Image (cartoon, rainbow, N blue to C red; front, side):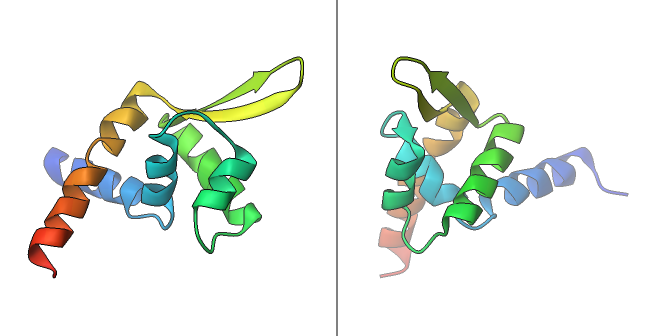
Length: 101
């Protein structure tokens, strides 16, 4: 049986290890975006996969979907939990720069 810490690690990996998650969180860390803006900023992702990943991130409570009226517009933004996770992205990039070059 898994320990509590191992379960937490596997849950975190399930979230951040899913393809495109880091790209989406990085894009949304710059502020709320429309679907098309996210799509333009995430290289090589299909619209269907982006839609699926955004839904998954909403289910994990990392991204919030807002519907604005007049004009009707759907926006995606990070929740506080998503922003806390996105704050680690620069650390990952620094680690790569320091250790993999």
